[in-house]
Length: 154
Image (cartoon, rainbow, N blue to C red; front, side, top):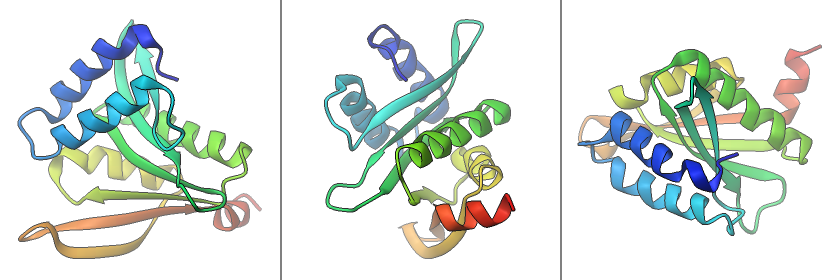
């Protein structure tokens, strides 16, 4: 989990990964909520290497839904770290009783490594909304389901 002392480093990581894109401001809003630490709808998980943050995940329970988690963002460019953190979100959520994790992600270059990592962690594309982000840019709906995960391990 993100420690209070890592807040500035996490912000710098997001800026390095998404600075100058249309996505940065919303991710910073969610990161600030996670740093505050008092909202179960958005918590941060980070992967570090050599004292440097390699990946930030923002996830939390979905208010009003039972056993559902939303993965708001998976940010980074180190594929191994992205896969590690995506699997940690899945494992932690499953241990807490989640049966479904949903991630909406733009089908855009800044998220290509994240999308790959999510698929490696057991997420499947269950929807695609054309022209959602902007003209020509789709929103992918990637979902991890407990029952599919159980079947894969059999």
